Length: 492
Image: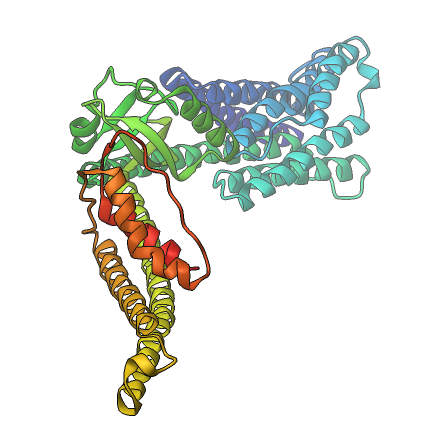
């Protein structure tokens, strides 16, 4: 029975180590084929697990001496859980974005590296507490894997299963050491069996990772093809730039027509330094831009007012900047022209309103001015009528000369008011023009005073003038001057 039990243990050890060796070879081949470090990291983990299985099962089956197993078990266990295993899991979680930098994991790696030579020199210090200690980082990685799964990282599901199996195997080992559970062969071999199943689960996680990457690449290619077709169909310039102000990776026909875009084309050459600084600062803050107005020169040198929108996109496997340019020059110029027309219309409306008010004021003033001479004319006419009916004019106290003077003065004043109204109409219509001509100043003064003398005499005023010896001639509008003097006289 003892020989049969030994054969069973040896067979189990061979199966476990053989399966682990297959995983080592498979992932080493993938590492050589893909040149990805994560496969080399997994291969190192699998080798350390294989060494642990050989040493643990060798002690279980007495196929290896105690000296060798005492050295190999703590070394391989710490390598598998504290160094190579931690490195593999850290790489996987970094891809998921769930692990940036963990001081606890870094401390555990340093501690594991430090404990390996200590247990190599003092194997008697290795015991049950070490198995309990290595379960702590596995629990931490399990927690981080759950977070990665919640964030949509699909390989984390297999990682959680593998870490859970490892924790179960470690728990069974402790219960067996404490003699809480029966002494069965598969329970005694729980650590190497758990390590095998954990490696298998991690290998499945790598397979899921490959599938996820393939789907991501396929999705990226599909998105890129859609982006290309969308860019080509857009009627305004659209460019995919390597940098915010760099050279284009892709552009549409509109960009070629307006900017003469090409492989050597650079947006930096078409913008002034102030707009360049504003664009860089805006993208540094928000990583995007929405319809910001920039001055950009076209291929003909014309400065356009462009509404620029920028987005981060994945193009040809690179993070790039999608530029969408909408020319708003005509819209802005039209708006400015409309604003100017609006201002001109408002100004014309205000002038028309002021002109209407001035006209109303003028009409009111003219009505008052006309009423005064008309009253004088009517009064003089009534006096003449009364005198003619009663007695001869020479016998009356009313002087005919005075009445006639009043009639003449008021009639002339009324005539001047009518002329003022006509002049105002000409000014309003923009047809008032001066009529300059040559005339003698002395003659003009004499006739003007003789015409205005009755009005001055009526106002008890005496007007005098001195004529120069030589007769001077002027070139001016004598009618306008006479009109001004008459207006001044009428105000007396």
